Image 1 (cartoon, rainbow, N blue to C red):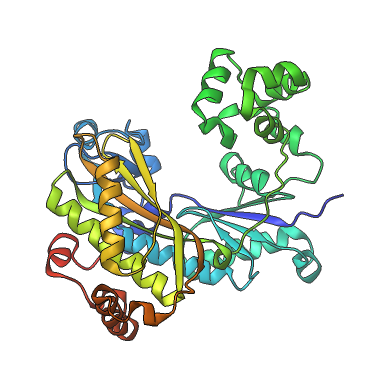
Image 2: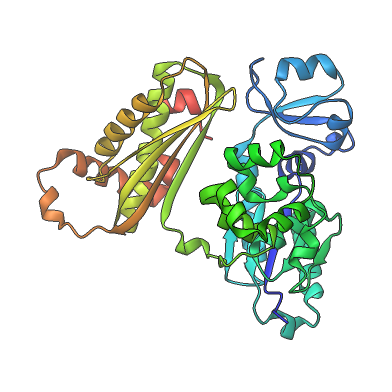
Length: 388
């Protein structure tokens, strides 16, 4: 029997829980989190009470306000949720050093050997659940299995605080579930085929996968992944945060906009964050991607190659990528920058001796290393983003 080594911790409705901890009067009251206070903003998180009132994820704020007048509408507080997330990460680090973060509200843990130390594997799950609740008042759920896929799905469909699936029972566990639970269903072509065939349960996909030739013909390049996922097969390992080969920063714009000056300022701020982190690590990114999220849910991105790590060079490249990607008139909700394929910066400093831009960046670095990343900001950044 395979050891149940992989835990998945889901922080159920982290945003709503965090707001209710901050303001206890919100408990048992319908609460929603908005992407922006603008009427064209959308609902990005909501409580069970708000859902019962007819509000749903992705609904326009203007429509939601008409449906329920007793609901409390709150702006997206990225700073608060980020602090809660990091505090929980520190809390669960006491159980294992091998933790992989999955968005704001999830963590994979590699728990090899802890069943020997703490008795039955469920005891470890209960210990983690209780520790998070005691230290943060956040309610979570813990899924336990032999791999990441099943552990995460457990927390999506099983209402228990802690639940485990024994090794070898993965396919049986998935069989009665709806296909949408599988990650591969995010692929549009796969989703369309499954919907067209009116497939209601994973077991139907499992039966189809037995006919290898037909299955491959139907799902083409996605056949192998779909076949593995429907049987609960996942060979990926829990990858510690420190091993992640990327630097990522995202700015949620206080109010959806397509104002060029505001967007220019946001890109400059993101460029300085990425540049500071790269220089601090003495690294350079072979690739850098800018990702644009629009108010209507549409996304687009562009990828470029980073040659220099001074703030101005990074900003110029990001600006070019942004202009290339942003061909729509719709308002923008957030901008994300991801620098990846990192390698050590081997270029000798003397090569930058006469580089004015690099010298300016290094002077700013000294101030930020002493007083913090947010200690030095230009006036336009302060006016638009404040100190978030």
